[in-house]
Amino acid sequence: MGTINFSDLKKNAEAAFTTAAEAANKNKAFAKDEREWQPSVDKVGNGFAITRPLPAPPGEDVPFVKYHKHAFKGPNGKWFIEYCPTDLGLPCPTCEYNGVLWATEDKAKRAIVSKQKRNLIYAGNHLILADKPSPENEGQVKIFNYGEKIHGKFKSVMAPEVEGMRKFNPFDFYNGANFQLVVRMIEVTENGQKRTYRNYDNSSFDACAPLFDGDDAKLEALWNKEHKLQPLIDPKLWKGYDELKKRLHFVLEIATVIQVQVPANVMTPQDEDSSNPNFSQREDVVNHDDNDDDKNLFQALANED
Ligand SMILES: [Zn+2]
Image 1 (spheres, rainbow, N blue to C red):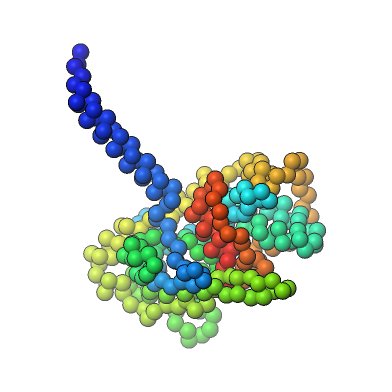
Image 2 (cartoon, rainbow, N blue to C red):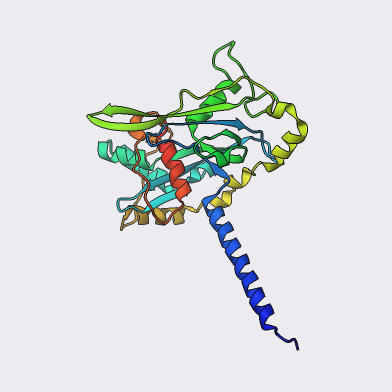
């Protein structure tokens, strides 16, 4: 039979509270996912950062992973943010529904398809070298999520389209290069309506040079700080068809089950280039029950040119 010393109990309670509070903070940090990074932009929407793309993390083969997600807001503000099962070679209720809407050839319905289309996302480790508005990020290894346009910049140096252009592996510690990321908000007028979209055309690579002057000890330490990427595409993250359909109906507030009959030859614009300004406008993000980071990312992707 132990005797309970009240002061010990009190002390333990305080310790327990501290532990719980720390855990809560950690959970909060995890929910916000501090591993992830996006370039800061000013009020106008312009931004500048320098990153060093990094090789695949220890135990993995590829320096980036890619997947598709749908992210859009329903008519009454509910969000649909879900992995697209087409990545797994499985049917996707959202893509199917988009196909039906697209086949109507109705302009308004096609505009909805644009909003609901799947977004291609790349995720890779980057060392943040310059991020003036958020200097706390400098020197940190972050997962940078980006779309096809920025990926195109990496692809263009890995496999240049024109003979004689500089060819290198941007993800290489020794022969890679720092990436100057330039974000510009471009405004265009279309059908009498002003639209804005993000443009990355001015982004470029510095001269190829070894990171940390090729100091192996520093590079190894950095490599060990890289975040695992494969867990981002763990098939467990993809929900099943029925669950997605239920969520889709909930978000779109469709009372009856949609009987989807997609004609075999219907083309959906899901892979349409996001440079089309029609595909680039997205409403401002407001508070809802889903993950804000996701929304910010998708807003950035949706606004990509
Ligand atoms: Zn889909």
